[in-house]
Image (cartoon, rainbow, N blue to C red; front, side):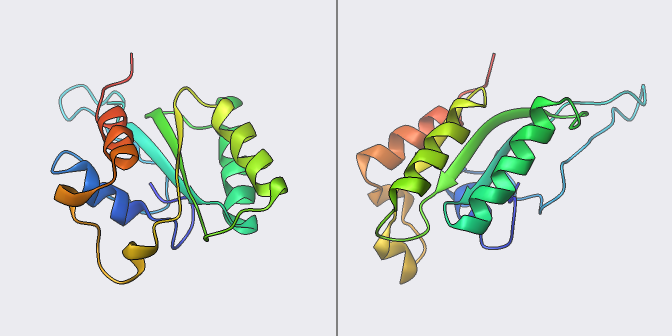
Amino acid sequence: MGLHGGAGASTLASLLGDGASEVGQAWPISQNAWTGSAWPIPVIAVARTDHSGLATADRFVRSWANGQLTGSQLSALVLIEAGPRTSDARKKATKRLLRMVPRGTHIPWMDPWLDAPPDPARLPGRIKRIIKLLNTPTK
């Protein structure tokens, strides 16, 4: 789920493959059609590392940590770099947020992705490792 517009959730969902879908900006809740009980969906939350994205991610992580987000399971927080250079304050905020969740990862700035969608067959090794991690079910 994208935590804000332009977070990169659609791009990430396309890299994760057919088992992933972009659900918008609302915490998804699914119900079992037979029992009516919640059917937890593994959710990957995505935000950019600009000021607004980090502030939104901070509010989201605090809501999750306080037990306010029920009905699905937070699988990971992915913070996608917002530009080619990062200030020390944003680096610190990124690291802090990623430590607050069960699984957190950071995708660096990818300049080629501005011109064309990423080609899954030509991803850098780091991105391939991140995709593999995110496609591994949480315990």
